[in-house]
Amino acid sequence: MNPCMRRPKANSLCRVAALALLLSAVASTGAVAGERCLPARRVSFAVEHSEEVGNDWMRAVAGVTDEDRDPARLAARINATMAAALARAKKVAGVQVKSGGYSTYPISRDGRLERWRASQDLVLESRDFETLSGLLAELQQTLEVRSVVFSVSRERRREIEDGLVRRALERFEERARLIRDTLGARSYELVEVRVDTGGSRPPLVPLRAEMQGRSAVRPPAFEAGTSKLTVRVEGTIELE
Image (tube, rainbow, N blue to C red; front, side, top):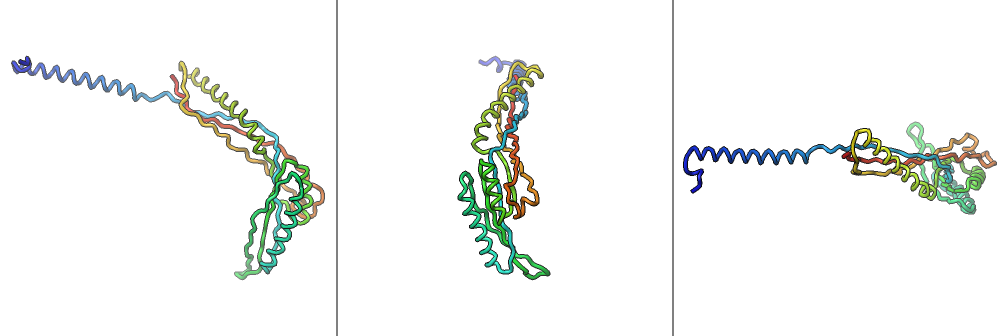
């Protein structure tokens, strides 16, 4: 026979013992769970590495804007001007050329339609700055230069980015070791890392008034300059 069934006093002792064992088990489980839920010693930070790179790509936009009371006559005049400019540009070796969109809108006065204004652009790109500058000088007889932008070409950017990424990751490691040593940790583990090559904003060359008009006959002088290429590394480490 079970000894806990012999006497009421014995039954009480058995119940107390069972309750003590149950509370001990719950406390032990809670302690283990508490250890597992301890917040991790994680640190998030970011580093950057930048280099100035000489621009090797030139992009120019030249266009024509005109007005007329007759929209059909206006469109014909714009199209003729752009067709001649496009044909001339396509003959120049080493220059990529494409026509931009055609836009037209009405001009009103005192609520009444007075005339129409239309505009169209020509986009020219090249590695050969001298050749493209000479072409712009010719096109300025009928078109106006709207903008000139210098940048780093895709090919050159790809060549340089690998080195930038490598150096940025090295700086990330250096910063991680600094954090580990400063906070007195034995070591660290990498939790996550993100590499952003982003993109530099190409410098827009300000155009003088005479370069925007149609009176220039000499090739405009441009300074290609440099662009800053930046790689940013963000990540999280866990200290141990």
